Amino acid sequence: MKEFWNERYNTEEYAYGEAPNEYVKQELSKLSPGKILFPAEGEGRNAVYAASRGWNVTAFDPSTEGKKKAELLASKHSVGIDYLISDYENCDFAKQSFDCLVLVYAHMPPALREMTHKKLTTFLKPGGKLILEGFSKKQINHNTGGPRNIDFLFSVDELQSDFSHFYELKFIEKEVFLNEGPFHQGVASVIRITGKK
Image 1: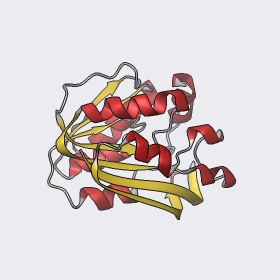
Image 2: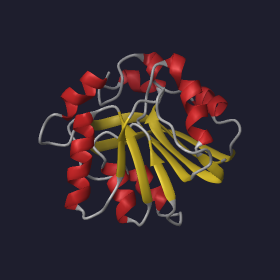
Image 3: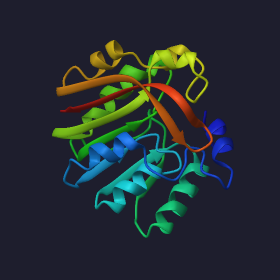
């Protein structure tokens, strides 16, 4: 997978645009800045936005090309982000050290999904906020982004199970119009979640 993402990000253009995801932008506006973690952050659009809003940002991704572009974007916006090269299995942070965990189109093989979500939430402080947007299984009917394997796409039931230890969990499954760089364009089926640990 690392090779796939390096190839996708090895262009001057940003694969998913330079602007933050609209849902992330909306939800971060409701929170006071603190420490925030962005797994699978790719080219850094959401991490850079959070840093510009005063957050102390840590991000990781297995793609070295993604990191290069994230750091270029951070420099362009005169902000700093701590961007690590890592996959889900090898990421390691202090337990209960982040105020917010943001997962944006962070899809993975089904065998990894539950285990990874549980692991990532251990890095979140009690009362810390979860923000997630990903493609629902209905996205298989749209050719507007995301994995073409339905098993990699999310269902509300799966995510409800993964984050069952959270409170104030809110789920929205809906169709949205994506305009995020060349690879997220058009009508898409997404699931959005917020919750507190």
